[in-house]
Image 1 (cartoon, rainbow, N blue to C red):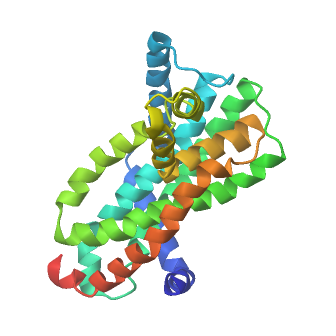
Image 2: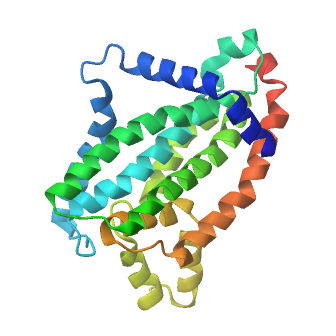
Length: 272
């Protein structure tokens, strides 16, 4: 991992140049440009609000649109960083065959590209919070830490998935389905309090309730989304009982994911 940090600094100009190229190519002939980056969460908030009007999803006393948008912001950043990161090596096959530089530049570039779109989404969230008179306090200083954690989770998947995708293209086909399922296993549409009440208060599955809750919080996105909503919308610090299981899992898997990527990269040019 020390080598990854060194490469990140040494090749920062290349990463920024490739990220700018990605953004330019993606929005070059798009009439709405970067507005497309916020249309997806806005449409999803509208759909979720419609579903909520039918089935009555609680929102912990917050305006549902703000709560959901605040959940979608880190979720979409993670989802798209991971998706583009997994496909980043195969989509740069021509470049890989021509010159050598550390291949982790590609997953890192995919994530940097998404940071630009995340910034645009933050502006929309700020406008929503102002409209609903939701005022953040000092706890909002946690936001950069939460975004950094989200980047690490996305890279953990990207390194392993990108290497595997070079040999088995099924990975890039299966990933959208897996991420869609993961979204429903994260507190995006509903608040975390719903799961807590079911499993910890009402013991909905008997003696397995607490174990199932621990398994649920091992999903790093549960801690990320809940923390993001707490520090920005509720003025509360992150709930570390929710964050720690996913954090431990992420930092256990990350070194293995990176090592697998580095071991596989020697053969990328031959296989791709």
